[in-house]
Image 1 (cartoon, rainbow, N blue to C red):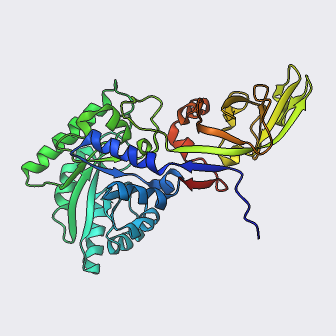
Image 2: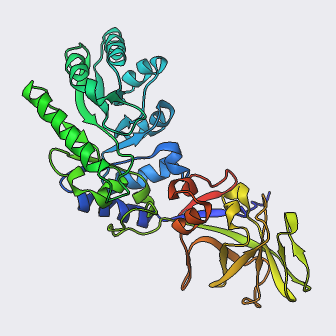
Image 3: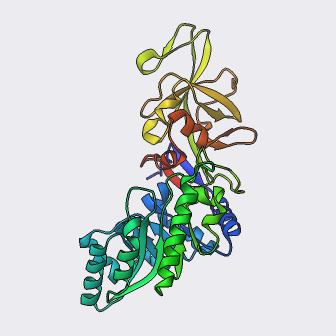
Length: 372
């Protein structure tokens, strides 16, 4: 049976990914870098991505929940759950030597009891809410909770961390206040003889905007979006990183339509003159934002072709008036760069009124991931 190629595919550059990891490492040295590979590495494929990063030197990975952690165990690197742990998940994570977050004293006690039953130590990092307002030990309770939890049996209390909600905004006073609060907590704990091997608070935005977040006492940073060569639209772009992915499809049809012809669902676009119109084999089911309708472009034969009409589930129409030599089967770059043109993740995010994380996570299941 003949193998049928996919009509839509992502080209993911291993070289760019490794280069971006090394750029983050150089920025934050001597702090260690933990790549965050949650949500199937933002939908790009966790194991191929993790293997590249391991070869580049990564010694640990961060994920959101236990299923993601289990996928990474064959790589023989430390795996951290960075969000929360449910009671029924604790035993399996201890048995697998996954590093568990402690977000309450009750949770710490349950982890301790489970570790004792298993005759193992549970490696934990205390998660402190210094201002994120989502998960973690409330800051005002942190000293007493951590002090008590460190006395529990079966606990290897190796780390402590927090998280930023506004690190993309260099002018906001919130992030410096969080850093100051966290340092004050560390100082108070050290006065009681409590120290940690790993202390971390910096995320990708902080690596770009707040150097104090990766200097002592901090010795570990977490990064996700920067590894993919993208930035928060509101953040600084001080890192020397490059885009990792290119989204491509094929030109399915080329037709000459008369002036006055209306295009696509809702007839949201009407041709003002006779035009060459192409149809590409990608739509919102593949990750093209609906907001590209009548606003975005694609690249065909290294020329920008405006999107006309509403983006539909499987197909999108484009004007080919500037690409009269276009032919059915031509490659179409929806996202990424060609010789002289570029469509960025950030530009899509701005059109969609969202952030780059959502764009990267949005590519559909029928989009083939090709690691080049």
